[in-house]
Length: 457
Image (cartoon, rainbow, N blue to C red; front, side, top):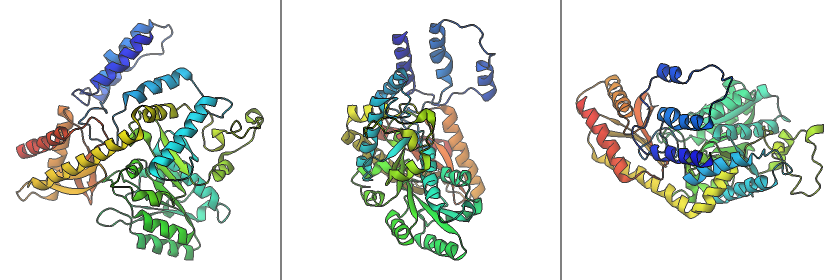
């Protein structure tokens, strides 16, 4: 059985690099194919494994395809894929060191490595999570808890730009901060938070009797990859004594490159930083990370003694419990895939791949600038937004519809994949490159397709 499982996994990796990227089956067809009553009697395991390849795999979107440019979804490293399977075989529940000694130490090593990679310098304090949304939630939970001594939740306020990831807005709501006190600070022409408006808003809220809890800055927005003015925001937070959380779920690993090394100084000033190894470190989903400046606060918030979870070990290493630093009790061994990728590839090779992805985005932008029918709308890191702009006098609505047609045609034909967004109300084609398989030929192919479909109208 083991060999058949491995063969099936490798087939998934192989097919994931082939066209079409998205299955053509419609929702009702997939529902009819998979819907079934609860099985009362089992079938041969061989038949179950066969269904993975024959039934489920053709219904999957191929996120590892070299021309998959949608959202912020990486091509998973095969080393990480097999490490994830090994983690399931080990079946370690990472509640505390006593329950998973080796796995706990691996995750603590991974946290130190990630800290070193991006220059946070919290000496590995933090926790691995399911992704950036969970990491952002944990960070804001700590900031809100710290502010509870000064004001009840209905008098607290948190701050982020209008480009901030939706997970931080949701976290504020879940934590009891009123929606109207989740302050969305306007951005500049480069979609970066306007620091002077942030400072003005902080002063206004204090005068109104509110307590500023946290500022959430972005080290790579989901729309265009925009990076907030992190140093200026850090200055404001230090002067105003406000928690600084940096959402680096996508962009933080770029701080390991020469081009974006300037972010490291800002990371070193933050109270918390989120980053997702399952984005730009090429780990399969799911694994996110929250790095913390001071883990004593997480122990204060999440530590809760009970008879059945009491730690009896005396040694400081053996007394460690992840459930004292996060919401989850039982946690899967997420760190093994990150540990395995870093061990097998080495940090330098991974950073070089990130640098190459950034260069590919720059090449895409250069090609856009040379094409009279293409209009650049915004880019940073490895994301570029643009649109097809005919030479005739179409209205903005007609241009939007044409670009919608271009994107839908590309996705339907299956040879490439992009996701859309809206920038200043304009429909934009958005390409995100977080893929170790993508080449300059793939970039040219994508733009050739945009020009072909756009030119045909």
